Length: 322
Image (cartoon, rainbow, N blue to C red; front, side):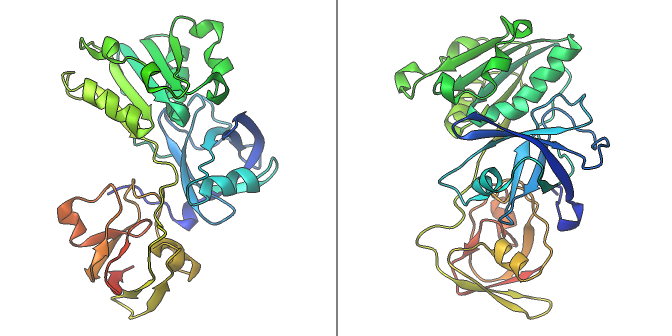
Protein backbone atom coordinates (compact mmCIF):
# COMPACT_ATOMS: atom_id res chain seq x y z
CA UNK A 1 0.00 0.00 0.00
CA UNK A 2 1.20 3.49 -0.77
CA UNK A 3 2.76 5.60 1.96
CA UNK A 4 0.30 7.66 3.96
CA UNK A 5 0.68 11.27 4.94
CA UNK A 6 -1.42 12.32 7.91
CA UNK A 7 -1.71 15.68 9.61
CA UNK A 8 0.56 14.47 12.41
CA UNK A 9 3.35 13.64 9.96
CA UNK A 10 3.61 17.17 8.59
CA UNK A 11 6.25 19.42 10.15
CA UNK A 12 6.59 23.19 9.70
CA UNK A 13 9.48 24.30 7.51
CA UNK A 14 10.65 27.87 6.94
CA UNK A 15 10.54 29.41 3.47
CA UNK A 16 14.06 30.82 3.24
CA UNK A 17 13.68 32.00 -0.34
CA UNK A 18 11.03 32.23 -3.03
CA UNK A 19 12.00 32.96 -6.62
CA UNK A 20 10.09 33.20 -9.88
CA UNK A 21 11.72 31.06 -12.58
CA UNK A 22 9.21 31.54 -15.41
CA UNK A 23 5.84 33.32 -15.69
CA UNK A 24 4.13 30.33 -14.07
CA UNK A 25 6.87 28.41 -12.20
CA UNK A 26 8.24 29.40 -8.79
CA UNK A 27 11.06 27.97 -6.71
CA UNK A 28 10.67 27.55 -2.95
CA UNK A 29 13.65 26.87 -0.69
CA UNK A 30 12.57 25.26 2.59
CA UNK A 31 14.76 24.91 5.68
CA UNK A 32 14.48 23.83 9.31
CA UNK A 33 13.25 26.78 11.43
CA UNK A 34 15.97 26.08 14.00
CA UNK A 35 18.76 25.77 11.46
CA UNK A 36 19.15 22.01 11.83
CA UNK A 37 19.52 19.30 9.23
CA UNK A 38 16.48 17.99 7.39
CA UNK A 39 15.64 14.30 6.96
CA UNK A 40 17.69 12.88 4.08
CA UNK A 41 16.21 12.32 0.64
CA UNK A 42 17.11 10.56 -2.59
CA UNK A 43 17.03 11.80 -6.16
CA UNK A 44 13.45 11.46 -7.40
CA UNK A 45 11.86 12.14 -4.01
CA UNK A 46 8.82 14.31 -3.43
CA UNK A 47 7.22 15.92 -0.39
CA UNK A 48 3.62 16.82 0.35
CA UNK A 49 2.97 20.47 1.22
CA UNK A 50 -0.16 21.80 2.91
CA UNK A 51 -1.06 25.12 1.28
CA UNK A 52 -2.72 28.06 3.06
CA UNK A 53 -6.08 26.95 1.61
CA UNK A 54 -5.74 23.59 3.37
CA UNK A 55 -5.17 21.70 0.12
CA UNK A 56 -2.24 19.30 -0.05
CA UNK A 57 -0.05 19.04 -3.08
CA UNK A 58 2.92 16.87 -3.95
CA UNK A 59 6.12 18.51 -5.25
CA UNK A 60 9.40 16.92 -6.31
CA UNK A 61 12.69 17.98 -4.77
CA UNK A 62 15.05 19.50 -7.34
CA UNK A 63 18.24 19.95 -5.34
CA UNK A 64 21.17 17.57 -4.92
CA UNK A 65 20.31 14.85 -2.35
CA UNK A 66 23.75 15.44 -0.84
CA UNK A 67 22.36 18.65 0.67
CA UNK A 68 20.94 18.15 4.14
CA UNK A 69 20.07 21.74 5.04
CA UNK A 70 17.27 22.44 2.55
CA UNK A 71 14.53 21.15 0.28
CA UNK A 72 14.09 22.98 -3.04
CA UNK A 73 10.74 22.73 -4.82
CA UNK A 74 9.57 23.85 -8.23
CA UNK A 75 5.88 24.80 -8.23
CA UNK A 76 3.87 25.42 -11.39
CA UNK A 77 0.76 27.55 -11.04
CA UNK A 78 -2.10 25.49 -12.48
CA UNK A 79 -4.65 28.21 -13.20
CA UNK A 80 -7.21 25.68 -14.45
CA UNK A 81 -6.83 23.43 -11.41
CA UNK A 82 -8.34 23.39 -7.93
CA UNK A 83 -6.20 26.17 -6.52
CA UNK A 84 -3.58 24.30 -4.51
CA UNK A 85 -0.62 25.67 -6.44
CA UNK A 86 -2.15 29.15 -6.59
CA UNK A 87 -2.67 29.14 -2.83
CA UNK A 88 0.98 28.27 -2.28
CA UNK A 89 2.37 30.77 -4.79
CA UNK A 90 0.15 33.69 -3.83
CA UNK A 91 -0.29 32.94 -0.13
CA UNK A 92 3.23 32.03 1.01
CA UNK A 93 6.13 34.47 1.21
CA UNK A 94 9.74 34.36 2.39
CA UNK A 95 9.81 33.97 6.16
CA UNK A 96 6.53 32.05 6.31
CA UNK A 97 6.21 28.47 7.54
CA UNK A 98 4.48 25.68 5.64
CA UNK A 99 3.64 22.13 6.79
CA UNK A 100 5.71 19.58 4.87
CA UNK A 101 5.84 15.78 4.93
CA UNK A 102 8.86 13.52 5.02
CA UNK A 103 10.35 12.81 1.57
CA UNK A 104 8.90 9.84 -0.30
CA UNK A 105 10.44 8.24 -3.38
CA UNK A 106 8.29 6.60 -6.04
CA UNK A 107 10.72 7.53 -8.84
CA UNK A 108 14.02 6.08 -7.58
CA UNK A 109 17.25 6.37 -9.54
CA UNK A 110 18.83 2.94 -9.99
CA UNK A 111 22.59 2.49 -10.25
CA UNK A 112 23.71 2.37 -13.89
CA UNK A 113 26.76 3.17 -16.03
CA UNK A 114 24.71 5.43 -18.29
CA UNK A 115 21.53 7.52 -18.08
CA UNK A 116 19.25 9.31 -20.50
CA UNK A 117 17.03 11.92 -18.85
CA UNK A 118 13.97 13.32 -20.65
CA UNK A 119 11.98 16.19 -19.15
CA UNK A 120 9.19 18.47 -20.25
CA UNK A 121 8.05 21.66 -18.52
CA UNK A 122 7.79 21.36 -14.73
CA UNK A 123 8.83 17.71 -15.08
CA UNK A 124 12.41 18.97 -14.92
CA UNK A 125 12.29 19.14 -11.10
CA UNK A 126 12.92 15.47 -10.17
CA UNK A 127 15.14 15.04 -13.22
CA UNK A 128 17.29 17.99 -12.13
CA UNK A 129 17.93 16.34 -8.78
CA UNK A 130 19.08 13.21 -10.63
CA UNK A 131 21.32 15.21 -12.96
CA UNK A 132 22.93 16.96 -10.00
CA UNK A 133 23.62 13.67 -8.24
CA UNK A 134 25.07 11.92 -11.28
CA UNK A 135 27.15 14.95 -12.29
CA UNK A 136 28.57 15.32 -8.77
CA UNK A 137 29.52 11.66 -8.51
CA UNK A 138 31.14 11.71 -11.96
CA UNK A 139 30.99 7.94 -12.45
CA UNK A 140 28.19 7.50 -15.00
CA UNK A 141 27.64 8.97 -18.44
CA UNK A 142 24.44 10.94 -18.86
CA UNK A 143 22.50 13.13 -21.23
CA UNK A 144 19.45 15.34 -20.63
CA UNK A 145 16.85 16.30 -23.23
CA UNK A 146 14.63 19.08 -21.88
CA UNK A 147 11.62 20.12 -23.97
CA UNK A 148 9.83 23.43 -23.41
CA UNK A 149 7.77 25.85 -25.45
CA UNK A 150 10.21 28.79 -25.39
CA UNK A 151 13.30 30.12 -23.57
CA UNK A 152 11.07 32.29 -21.37
CA UNK A 153 9.16 29.19 -20.20
CA UNK A 154 12.29 27.17 -19.42
CA UNK A 155 12.89 26.74 -15.70
CA UNK A 156 16.53 26.43 -14.57
CA UNK A 157 17.73 27.45 -18.05
CA UNK A 158 20.85 29.31 -16.92
CA UNK A 159 21.88 26.53 -14.56
CA UNK A 160 21.50 23.89 -17.26
CA UNK A 161 23.74 25.93 -19.56
CA UNK A 162 26.62 25.87 -17.06
CA UNK A 163 30.05 24.99 -18.52
CA UNK A 164 30.28 21.71 -16.59
CA UNK A 165 27.12 20.47 -18.34
CA UNK A 166 28.22 21.48 -21.84
CA UNK A 167 27.62 18.68 -24.32
CA UNK A 168 25.36 16.81 -21.89
CA UNK A 169 22.20 18.92 -22.04
CA UNK A 170 19.91 19.57 -25.01
CA UNK A 171 17.21 22.21 -24.45
CA UNK A 172 14.62 22.11 -27.22
CA UNK A 173 11.94 24.77 -27.81
CA UNK A 174 9.00 23.96 -30.10
CA UNK A 175 7.25 27.37 -29.79
CA UNK A 176 3.95 25.49 -29.58
CA UNK A 177 4.30 24.25 -33.17
CA UNK A 178 3.53 20.49 -33.55
CA UNK A 179 5.89 20.37 -36.52
CA UNK A 180 8.79 21.47 -34.32
CA UNK A 181 8.56 18.88 -31.54
CA UNK A 182 11.73 16.99 -30.69
CA UNK A 183 12.36 13.88 -32.81
CA UNK A 184 12.81 11.19 -30.18
CA UNK A 185 12.93 8.35 -32.68
CA UNK A 186 16.52 9.30 -33.46
CA UNK A 187 17.27 8.67 -29.77
CA UNK A 188 15.22 5.51 -29.19
CA UNK A 189 15.38 3.69 -32.54
CA UNK A 190 18.30 1.55 -31.40
CA UNK A 191 18.07 0.24 -27.82
CA UNK A 192 21.03 1.29 -25.70
CA UNK A 193 22.37 0.35 -22.30
CA UNK A 194 21.18 3.54 -20.62
CA UNK A 195 18.52 3.73 -17.94
CA UNK A 196 15.91 6.20 -19.21
CA UNK A 197 14.08 8.55 -16.82
CA UNK A 198 11.20 10.60 -18.21
CA UNK A 199 8.98 13.15 -16.48
CA UNK A 200 6.66 15.69 -18.03
CA UNK A 201 3.25 16.27 -19.63
CA UNK A 202 1.23 13.28 -20.79
CA UNK A 203 1.89 13.81 -24.53
CA UNK A 204 5.64 13.68 -23.91
CA UNK A 205 5.32 10.60 -21.70
CA UNK A 206 3.13 8.82 -24.24
CA UNK A 207 5.54 9.60 -27.07
CA UNK A 208 8.53 8.22 -25.17
CA UNK A 209 6.54 5.18 -24.04
CA UNK A 210 5.44 4.46 -27.60
CA UNK A 211 9.00 4.62 -28.90
CA UNK A 212 10.66 2.44 -26.26
CA UNK A 213 8.61 -0.75 -26.35
CA UNK A 214 11.56 -2.59 -27.90
CA UNK A 215 13.98 -1.49 -25.17
CA UNK A 216 15.02 -3.94 -22.42
CA UNK A 217 12.42 -4.51 -19.67
CA UNK A 218 13.02 -2.25 -16.68
CA UNK A 219 15.12 0.28 -18.61
CA UNK A 220 12.42 2.95 -18.95
CA UNK A 221 11.13 4.85 -15.91
CA UNK A 222 8.28 7.39 -15.82
CA UNK A 223 6.84 9.86 -13.37
CA UNK A 224 3.60 11.55 -14.33
CA UNK A 225 3.11 15.21 -13.38
CA UNK A 226 -0.67 15.36 -13.23
CA UNK A 227 -0.82 18.85 -11.69
CA UNK A 228 -4.08 19.99 -10.14
CA UNK A 229 -6.51 17.37 -11.44
CA UNK A 230 -10.08 18.69 -11.89
CA UNK A 231 -11.69 16.37 -9.34
CA UNK A 232 -14.74 18.63 -9.26
CA UNK A 233 -16.57 19.16 -12.54
CA UNK A 234 -19.21 21.78 -13.43
CA UNK A 235 -21.98 19.18 -13.69
CA UNK A 236 -21.21 17.45 -10.38
CA UNK A 237 -24.00 17.19 -7.81
CA UNK A 238 -24.15 16.89 -4.05
CA UNK A 239 -24.45 13.51 -2.33
CA UNK A 240 -24.14 11.97 1.12
CA UNK A 241 -21.51 9.71 2.65
CA UNK A 242 -22.27 7.58 5.69
CA UNK A 243 -19.75 6.02 8.06
CA UNK A 244 -20.52 2.30 8.20
CA UNK A 245 -19.13 2.00 11.72
CA UNK A 246 -20.60 5.05 13.45
CA UNK A 247 -23.61 5.92 11.31
CA UNK A 248 -22.44 9.52 10.91
CA UNK A 249 -23.64 11.14 7.68
CA UNK A 250 -21.90 14.01 5.90
CA UNK A 251 -23.27 15.99 2.98
CA UNK A 252 -20.70 16.39 0.18
CA UNK A 253 -21.32 19.63 -1.74
CA UNK A 254 -21.16 19.70 -5.52
CA UNK A 255 -18.03 21.84 -5.44
CA UNK A 256 -15.96 19.94 -2.84
CA UNK A 257 -14.37 16.50 -2.69
CA UNK A 258 -15.14 13.83 -0.11
CA UNK A 259 -11.69 14.27 1.40
CA UNK A 260 -11.97 18.05 1.68
CA UNK A 261 -15.42 17.83 3.25
CA UNK A 262 -14.54 15.14 5.79
CA UNK A 263 -11.37 16.98 6.74
CA UNK A 264 -13.37 20.18 7.27
CA UNK A 265 -15.70 18.17 9.52
CA UNK A 266 -12.76 17.34 11.77
CA UNK A 267 -11.74 13.90 10.52
CA UNK A 268 -8.00 13.16 10.26
CA UNK A 269 -7.58 11.16 7.07
CA UNK A 270 -4.46 10.00 5.21
CA UNK A 271 -3.69 11.77 1.96
CA UNK A 272 -0.75 12.81 -0.16
CA UNK A 273 -1.14 13.76 -3.83
CA UNK A 274 -4.85 14.73 -3.72
CA UNK A 275 -4.96 14.09 -7.46
CA UNK A 276 -5.89 10.41 -7.59
CA UNK A 277 -2.40 9.19 -8.43
CA UNK A 278 -0.76 7.93 -5.22
CA UNK A 279 -3.25 5.70 -3.36
CA UNK A 280 -2.79 7.19 0.10
CA UNK A 281 -6.46 8.07 0.65
CA UNK A 282 -7.88 4.69 -0.35
CA UNK A 283 -11.05 4.14 1.67
CA UNK A 284 -13.21 1.04 2.05
CA UNK A 285 -16.45 1.19 0.04
CA UNK A 286 -19.33 -0.69 1.68
CA UNK A 287 -22.34 0.34 -0.41
CA UNK A 288 -23.48 2.77 -3.09
CA UNK A 289 -22.47 3.42 -6.69
CA UNK A 290 -19.17 5.33 -6.93
CA UNK A 291 -17.87 7.51 -9.74
CA UNK A 292 -14.22 6.43 -9.84
CA UNK A 293 -11.87 9.16 -11.11
CA UNK A 294 -8.49 7.95 -9.85
CA UNK A 295 -5.60 6.43 -11.77
CA UNK A 296 -4.62 3.88 -9.12
CA UNK A 297 -7.30 1.28 -8.41
CA UNK A 298 -7.72 -1.80 -10.59
CA UNK A 299 -11.19 -2.88 -11.69
CA UNK A 300 -11.18 -5.49 -8.94
CA UNK A 301 -10.10 -2.98 -6.28
CA UNK A 302 -12.76 -0.49 -7.39
CA UNK A 303 -15.44 -2.93 -6.26
CA UNK A 304 -14.47 -2.43 -2.63
CA UNK A 305 -12.52 0.82 -2.38
CA UNK A 306 -12.62 4.46 -3.44
CA UNK A 307 -10.07 7.26 -3.63
CA UNK A 308 -11.82 10.02 -1.74
CA UNK A 309 -9.53 12.81 -2.98
CA UNK A 310 -11.05 12.74 -6.49
CA UNK A 311 -13.85 10.17 -6.79
CA UNK A 312 -17.51 10.91 -6.17
CA UNK A 313 -20.91 9.17 -6.17
CA UNK A 314 -23.37 8.28 -8.90
CA UNK A 315 -25.91 7.23 -6.27
CA UNK A 316 -27.41 9.56 -3.67
CA UNK A 317 -25.36 7.97 -0.89
CA UNK A 318 -22.08 6.14 -0.40
CA UNK A 319 -21.44 4.02 2.67
CA UNK A 320 -17.74 4.13 3.59
CA UNK A 321 -15.47 3.09 6.43
CA UNK A 322 -13.10 5.81 7.63
